[in-house]
Length: 327
Ligand code: NAD
Image 1 (cartoon, rainbow, N blue to C red):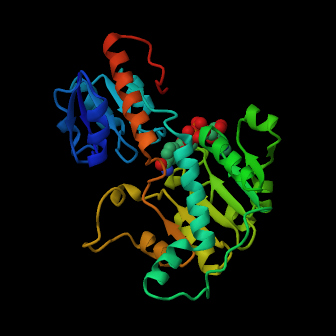
Image 2 (image 1 turned 90 degrees about the horizontal axis):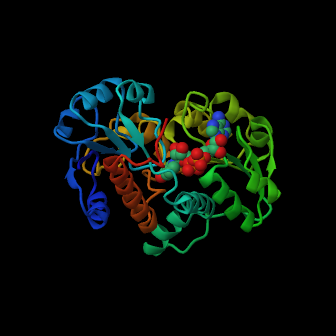
């Protein structure tokens, strides 16, 4: 089958080419939206990523062009209009669990970097500055970590933090039996926000979770607490978080995702003038760390993403049951 890949990066080509045996892979750099959708001409499958915009118009055009399968090479599918896909008879698959460890471990990396300031120490030492002034951190041991969303990634993260001697509080709309059996305590969202020294977001972005972290929820957090988001940018109201950082209420912020990331992430703007005032303001705080949606980015995860996606295309071609169908 001919598969058109949108938002392609060099590593996508590397991993998909290595796994592919039978399909014709057509790589496009552009993000998928209404202006670029025609690049999928003559394809039976479109392979998209986190910031591609699969709204009703794009879905309708894909269906008219004869595309039958949208294969998301990621876990989240908040950027796909599933109603429109259903209406136009388009099947959507995703990669539900390529490596929860990759994301959970990156979450820990953000916490440790913000806390122990290794990014600042690295630069200081390279310049011959061996002073410890302003590098003070805190022990993670004994601290309370609030985990919002305890699915595959949240569960892995709970276990990592427990291993470090943290006390873990969880909030989810559906409690995880395995974690309950391990003694993880579930609580209300308010109680979690009030009690946690670190709050980490691992729920999907949907109508119920959009701006879950807003002015009111930030006020409930402990003064000086740390907030980490490796879920989706839209879980946080960015303006509210900037305000909380400005007053000193929010102590630290670690982001791997950002609400307006589609205009920035996965591209090099080092020689350009960045127009997004919010990200510039965020990056100006000494207690904010931003990574560009790289939590998934490990060799194991990329291999699994390519294998699972191409297996789904194989099944679609044969008319077999699609294990990772969405909706
Ligand atoms: P999952 O489906 O296994 O778990 C999600 C959990 O969130 C579930 O337990 C679900 O019940 C819970 N949930 C749903 N609605 C909720 C709500 N309103 N409040 C609280 N909890 C709620 O998903 P996962 O594989 O653990 O991934 C979680 C999210 O992480 C994905 O949706 C995706 O957006 C994000 N993600 C980010 C990266 C990255 O590179 N930064 C990579 C993969 C996934």
